[in-house]
Length: 459
Image (cartoon, rainbow, N blue to C red; front, side, top):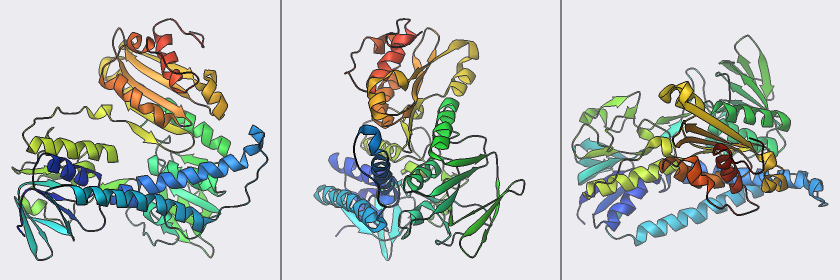
């Protein structure tokens, strides 16, 4: 078997396997190196299992609230073993499907083992050296912690531990109010736990529009999820029954466990990148807009490249790089046009600029916003959800930001992405016909209002 390929991909997560599959379609020979399972963190320890738990939590809430809909039912408890069986079944089905895709792909050789970059065009796996005319670095990310904060996997855990926890905690402190922290807060509250989020910044989901943060904070309060904002973490101690967490000011919290959800770091240490002269910054690999590193023939994609750490960004990177290597010169994506979703209850979805970022870029006097309350949307009323669709537009120009909060708004983000990326003017969207009753109508109603002809709301 030859160990020479057109492309060697180091890492089999979303970005890596997307690069391998697309390169195969373009008749390039590929070695895909993965030390664990193809699919990476997203499939096995992140996106997919987390969303399965969130759906189980939604089912629990539906049972708990059934009487509101005239249904006689009650929540008798949560069988965590069966919840995990459901979650693992979802993951395994997706994993088998992905294995089948890779096996069926022509010219893709899956090489199992931990790879290391040993030359400009070589990757070593065990005692085997793979040579590629091009090398794609796609090694993903890991759960960060804080200096001096020891993760023991029992009482102080990361999201990976949380996905396999063999007990339902009665109380949890979550360190970090970003996407991961808010999603697990939502899961555990749905399962009946007392949840407190500790966040050093002054709001949850700080990278989202400020109005979205405020809406989530209000919704969490109604659900009984506490949030200590502007309270940096100081220390954690083990107690007889769990942990004691101390924050700035000396305030203490006691709980069964502490979830550390302070973000994810690039998985680049000890893989030979710096030794081969690749420029790095804070562990991230630096690239140009075409994802080329400073070393000719070496590309980097996904979570190790500065920017939003999202699986769908990894997919896009992988496809882009494969086409770039094949000489197709694909267009460079505007990363502000990548959809962002937090799958807590309520969901948060957005594309483009926040209001604050738009005012900074274009000038405060050039920005107009409109917020459509989902209380005026029939489908939202049926779902008993609260939230909004907020548009940010440049004066006499396109919509440059779409921000949504509410149940299932993640399903609307595809249209929001088209609105932003196609630089649509409000009049362009206002003339579209949205099916009734759907929450998609909220996007149409908001654009109608921006054109001066609101239908189901006051201007």
